[in-house]
Length: 420
Image (cartoon, rainbow, N blue to C red; front, side):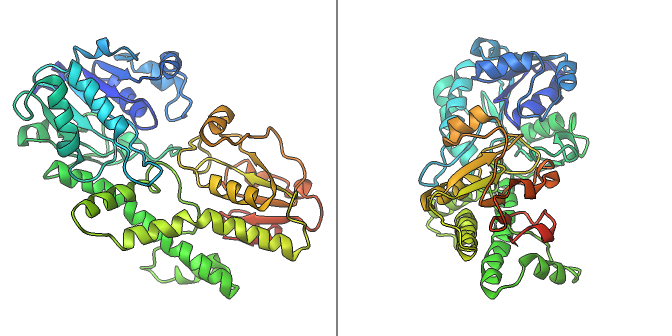
């Protein structure tokens, strides 16, 4: 199991896969594989639309080759799967991309291959769902002809400080020997070190609870925001006061979108329910967070009514559609909930976001992005992009009746009517 004797294939080149391919491609023969031919063509020229890797870093990975041709995978012996694991319309795990990737690998892998999954799943998914697919399409036997590992991704989109190599990596393998191999493989590129979990299920569960814990904590302060709104006090003022105690956890209220925190708790809940337990805390937290877009929209409409604005036909501006600041990632954006709710009230809603890809937003959410704002009856800061913090909001107001709502508590309090 000498690492240098292996050729590595990274399956899926999104926010997780590309930084991984670049890191491995600087040291080992690596294939960066994606079914999106446009993505492959751009990456081959050093262009990354996710902005996770710059051109210089991509082109410097001189042992990395990008491909969308499955034939190029046949001489690889290590496969690392980083495809999306979304939820469907019923908020149940959608394993289709994961199982399709497993099927493809099964058709090309040779004996002795190691398949490592990084996609976030529920405990047991690798061995109970993916391994049977690998066996079926390879005709090989698990832990005899091929092996598996699991090392959950910890990429934080848009974060240029906490990057792939500077975040400790949890590793695991299907046998003690493979666990050591997987740990050594990642140790060779992760400067922050690795943590070898005792089993694949433990590694899978560790990732699921990382995001579920954040989700529950945020849901608590979101619920506080709803309560304090009715009381008539500012949530952030309360949090500042409470944070003077050393052991208070200072989470902030807000929209919980993205591919991880807003999705992964459903994977953990799915596994629990399959075993006959209906999780209370996890799902109650999800319900609170999923309703925050509706809460913000309703709050804005109430404020507009108080100022005498005729709601039907009024114009509103949403500043931002990505799921976090200074990042182009629009996956599972909860800004869409605010947009849809305001439209149902009869408002004409513009969305402005210099970081988002307008074609992608139109395709994913059927929302057109404007190139420059006009004049509005309501302005809502939904994402704290650096550009928005410098905006002259007065120039966007129709008049003194215009409502400014700050959902990120990022603007000067003197210029807003209310904040979350």
